[in-house]
Length: 143
Length: 178
Image 1: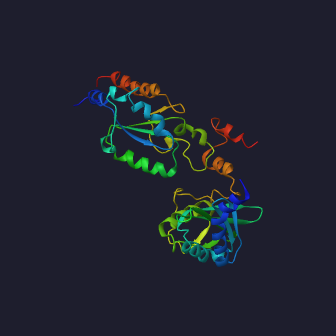
Image 2: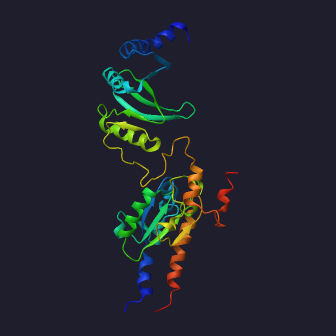
Image 3: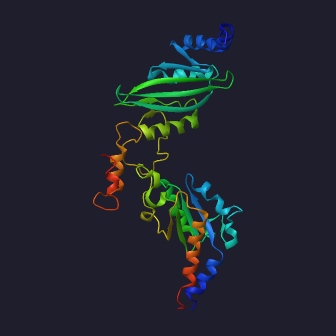
């Protein structure tokens, strides 16, 4: 039988990311992709189809309309799949906490693996979150 | 700026205003340079728009609605741009707040007007007679009142829909109203 740890070790060697960004989400996360904090050093690349993706990045405020699309994307991703929510908007609604049409808690709609707080989160925080996943996989028991 | 120059600058506007006032049978105001305003009756809207269209105001920039809650009416403004004269004409009509119905201008600006009218319908509840597609644009699955109306208490709506006062994590959201 294939061990879970063996599979996950291959998984964390190349984390392929699909982005679902609303409002300022994309512009704030561009430094992560850019040359200074270059996420490709760690084998992370953004892919053009959810069918190739391992991790779904969600940033910016989400509305019920955009959540429907995000759920469709999540369903298309192959297992094992993870959702990382970036910024304060998916956590509490952020500065849109009293807006009539924004999602206040992302976990009501999608199974969130990890929240990364900040408005916007620093690129270091994003990498820290990814390292936590890697450490978790290396610390898995051999079963 | 001398008087002569001023007259020279206003000359183009004056010419159009005279022609428009004659055709619409309404007073057209020069708000400032290149900006014209005219108020009309809501039932005349399609006629007025087609007259303006024939005079060169071919581009419908947007349709906007203002909620005048004290006067109990909505002011609908059609912003028309003329490529020929480089001028913006705003046609304004006031409709009753209780029965907000106005004729659609999709016969003139088919898809463009349809989108603008859908937005106005969604946020203010204005019904555009003749527009066959008034489906929600941004608010999918919305069951509350039209949110941009002045009498819509959005903070109360949010507290009812999203937050629970008995939850200690969320009770501080309820202190804002006091």
